[in-house]
Length: 335
Ligand code: NAD
Ligand code: MG
Image 1 (cartoon, rainbow, N blue to C red):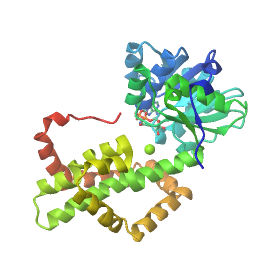
Image 2: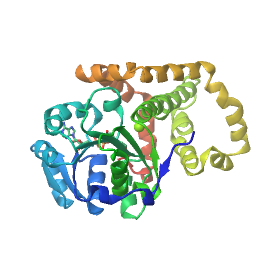
Image 3: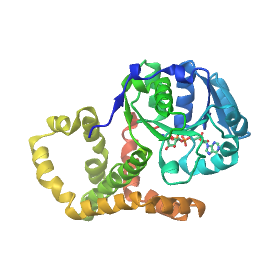
């Protein structure tokens, strides 16, 4: 079943007009949300840690900042735009004591609510507005009169206005100019984790490394392996991003297309699909969430060790040398 979508005329900014919005965090999403909401005529206070260097940045952007406890105390709506692992502690120390009837908590990712790391009291509304893009783009498109599509979800709806408030917030971000898709905290949390693990981050990096290693082990130059299995990924993905698989296939040779449709399915075997199902099951049962929460509590030993090992992989050493030949690539970060 297709998800429900909302646009400009479905959302009323007036729902947030006389309210104070507290944006917690001034990183990728926080800065973009705060600035877009402010420029949409809404009252925004950015909540920061005492002594945070972001106070200056917020002031330079022409916005108001306050220490966490004070920002939250004034807010009708508090938006959690902190790193997900940091949210539960900030919630316990600063947000929970200030909550009461009529308050709204807003998240940009469903993890902490769905997996019970934050359990708000029953008298508050709990909603999600999640732009499907990094903060930088959320801001740039807003300034250009456009917007990034958003997800909206309602977890707890005491006021009966949760969806309307979420849509107003999405409109303030510019999201309704593009379209806002309705989802649930469960669906967003589980599909987000699955996508990043099986396909986007985990799947794609493992695929590129396996291709690179196969060529290098067979005696081909690592430089060639890098270009064929890593560097050219972007050309293909950009085409898919623009117009789908069909569009990409219009731009590659017939030889490439024949190899694609005959060999691709042999790479993603039934075994791989079974593993995808196992990974999804770990997400659905909360096993992954428990592992990641405990890993954070333990000071991230596995995370640190594995990332250190990854950083030493030859694919990036060769890549760095090749990228030095391509200064025109720049260093485009995502956020
Ligand atoms: P970020 O790391 O860019 O920014 C987080 C900010 O919070 C930083 O300014 C950091 O200094 C501050 N911070 C960290 N710990 C803090 C603490 N204890 N107290 C106060 N401030 C603290 O994070 P982000 O990428 O903007 O993500 C924020 C939320 O948005 C997350 O829930 C994430 O899942 C969600 N989200 C991110 C994206 C994205 O593309 N980056 C897209 C959609 C949703
Ligand atoms: Mg994601």
